[in-house]
Image (spheres, helix red, strand yellow):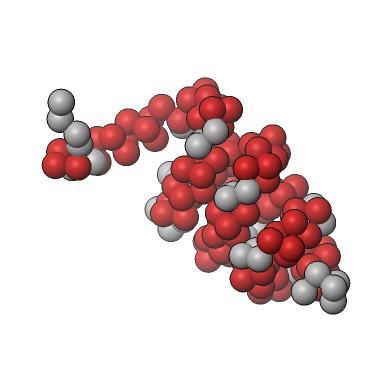
Length: 153
């Protein structure tokens, strides 16, 4: 897909106002994000800044729908396995927006997966602790963990 030039077209289409077009483009990018060549091209084309903007518009309830954001989070999850890209995601501000998304039940599972990947590195976990919803989120997860899943010493 890199040779055909499809990825830049898909990333550029994320600026459009048509919700269905944006959803289809993100879905296609999600499928393409599994391959290393495609992953590098997706990031090179400016996907992270557009993803940050889409997450912000969803939080402001201005344009995106929950299924679109779920697919976007799945794409970010696929990309986050590369440590350099995960660091770029933290630098773009994706971590704080994903932390805010955890409060929305429709996208919570996908948001927690991305949040886990971004907090593997020390910088991501320290930024989460200073985020307004970071400590309450961690306390909620700890309170919801069953006792038999905890290690007793």
